[in-house]
Length: 543
Image (cartoon, rainbow, N blue to C red; front, side):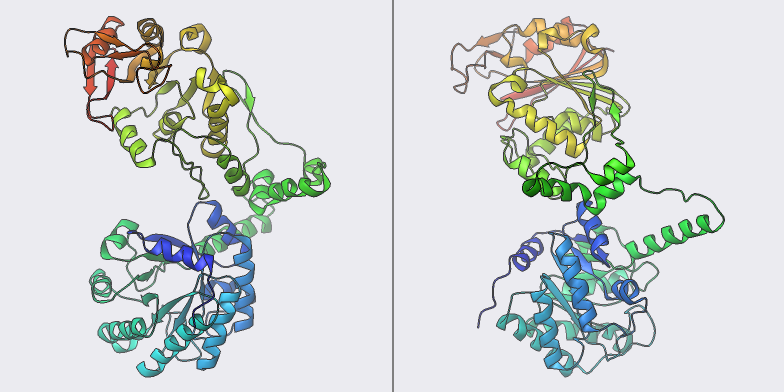
């Protein structure tokens, strides 16, 4: 009998098929799961240790029941859209209980369930007093779990062994291999005690492997890239968020106890957004029309005015659904990560843009003020800010004022999602001046030159705003001689059937223009374009 398909299980399988290791913070309730998703993590783990502590205030010593765990699973799954892996402990009884646990977790919407080989009552894998059942019984648990998966709703089986502590690593690896033969999708050898043991686990076992990183536990805490190099697909942090939350709560309680205001609290607007008030009110409008937000009416609006060239205000943060819905309606030029799993489908792919950004910013802009001329939907503006620019102004005119203002809608959404501090001004290239926008340490003019009817005048005017560095990227014509400086003229739709493509300079022409405009030192990167030599990148320096 084939399993009933599950989109969330298939999504997890797709993630595990990629050659990478996922950092997976563990959730202990719906709110912690929401925060994990809001911060951009692609999956989460429902930790039995953490749920036992949060839900019943008891240690992970077999006290929490199947019913309490499956209820916690429903709460967590209902709060997020990312895959959730659930801790199924020992299956809460014999093989029939294991089957019930797997089916119950699948029906709750979990993407995977972890079943382990400890003797009941089970213990946290990094605490004393744990013991495991015999290998045959352990394998039967996994076989029962796999049968339940195949006969019901699809869910991945994560098979865990704690045999390392009592019987040594070789026995633990042998058990895990047998679990794979019994139908497990993911393997987990608990509490290896060295990097070499972790390497053995990955080298000797098939399929995806999981590492459990407990601060203060037996297993070495490694960086994600080190775990990926060893061969792990998942690295869970089961207690990190709970530990951080407990520390923050006790510090706040200590302050209140002595009559002080707790430090480091979220402001009320951020608290509301994180919990979901903003999304609630937006959804409510679909059914009962616009209403005054009662919480906002009581607390007052705290929207902060941001000073820009054309003064604007910072909008409230977008919900994931709002972001995704708006992104799907826009024709994007750049592929950009808007956070929360929302990626734009741009003409320029992400890997190509990352390659080009490394070349554009080959000379660091950290601490610089940056002007991005012809920003389109703003990839390089936001990238400059991400790389440490102190201030960024994005400008455009043709792309922001064309039919439907498509790229301006993209820029506005990207600004709201990526960095609201990036400023913008709609202004034509030839209207740029110190009076209009000021001067900047670094000026970018990428993909603009060949669209201009008067390119040298533009280089002169824009270059005057650059105090240190002027970066130009442009199409270059490979059919004209490399010297002397010259340009090909493209009437009509001669270049790429685009009536806005006018000029094809040679490299010498752009270098000569930059030097004539006060940039005596010029570097040339002719490897910038997808087709070798068809585009070039120029960095002009004042000194």
